[in-house]
Amino acid sequence: MSLAAFPRPRAILFDWDNTLVDAWPAVNTALNAAFAAMGHAPWTLAETKERVRKSLRDSFPEMFGARWTEARDVFYARYEAEHLRHLVPMAGAGETLAGLKALGLYLGVVSNKTGRFLRAESTALGWDGYFGRLVGATDAAADKPAPDPVHMALDGSGVRAGPEVWFVGDGAIDVQCALAAGLTPVVLEGPDIRAELMRHNVDQFVPHDAFIEGLSALLSFWGSDADHDPVK
Picture (cartoon, rainbow, N blue to C red):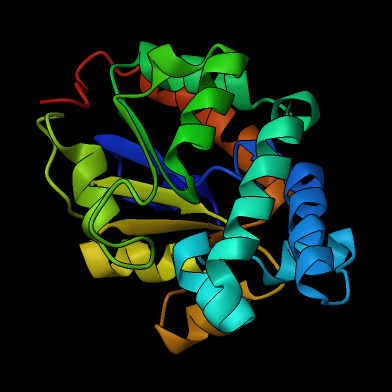
């Protein structure tokens, strides 16, 4: 589906991992450190990419039971040591954010990555100036797919949650969050996404490798329209 078919946005909220950045090697390393400490078998990188969707506070009690806080502490220690040196922006992400910001669009992040790690990664990439707010796991009362972090990300922006706010992400949990908050989900096609779209009667996805190219084309189009003020 072409991005031009979506409602023209006044604000865009992004997922983080596998949408703007590739931080999966550090996640996989930290998760396997927790698995080893708890006597669990490790996951491959591909398994981690496929299975990790919920925030740690929602997923670890399911995975580790009564010992989940021990596993959490192991994960955090390893991730903090690893994540910045493994951090890689998705191709074209920085340039796209700069172009969107130049048009006056409000940009934010809603991620299930722990908030302090999320903001440290944005700072390391030099991206802080692009975003009004970066909301990670545990920042709001509930994490994705609840709508709480969406409302926190939009707070103070002058833009209310609604169809003119895009939520760009690659997982079913991003679709659920967008719909719960009344946003337009812009879905980067992934292994679990088609079934979720069908379940919610949502017929709008963008192949991951075409997203930046399509958004770049729209940037040129929007930029040539002098009558459009995305923040009015």
